[in-house]
Image 1 (cartoon, rainbow, N blue to C red):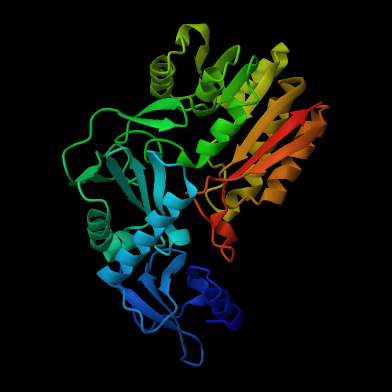
Image 2: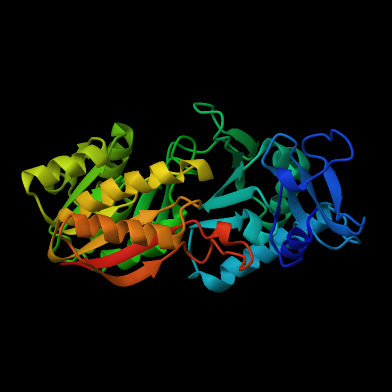
Length: 383
């Protein structure tokens, strides 16, 4: 391993890439391996994934520390203690374990009321840590249902790990707003929990406003806006079932869905159509899925962001608000803001930044692991 990589690992970076790794043998997926530098000195111990560009996910840089139940128990307990400290009491929809940031790389656990939803970023992580993680959660949070979702196997029902099968929907809250969550079939683990605080922050800008929520999913930004007194909200999503769920969420909050609009359409195309029609809104939200699944996809992603944000900015009435988000970890904040500025200028608009946001405090980031700061949320006045 190169000297600079050894230094990065010592500072807390949790990944060792394939090009830096020279295995002594073929190795099994999910094996716990020790990594040494060129001089044979111990650098790290972690999970081996022979088929991944991330060849080893680091679990410790202490050669005396075993990878066992006690270690996972300590890390889960620390993750739970952090959430209790940084989130309001009673928060019932949150990320309990955030992978690398909680020193359990590749492990995600979200809580929805009485249900824990587990997800692993790689099969190797599941093999190495799955049993230990489940045991730690059972000991730390006894009595809760645990299910596991495998996003790589679309259409597959989640595996019931502990407890009774989950109901069709689970009621949770973001502040005073209620959501009915489908933890079995919903995107991610059911909700985009990383936007919880931004949903509430943006809602405060929407009282009396007309709001366009592009890529609305089950109504995150749009529902908060309507509950905060927005005059009219248009939710746009390509998935009709997501829009039906959004309508149910509006109704669950005593917000009449018939007074708002739910449009099943491609948000990119509809934004362009609305622009040609000369439509405007007081607040426009553009929160698309990741456009850059890899570094190679970044140029194409920036082009897509440019098209989307140019049209979105053009749809904002003079002095209105644009909320633009990117959850693509491969797209840096600088690249995202530069693309937004260029797209707005091409549309004859100027963006005045009010706020730059990221994921909520239950999605912490290790300073030495900038890849973990994937979510960028721009809140800007458009003129």
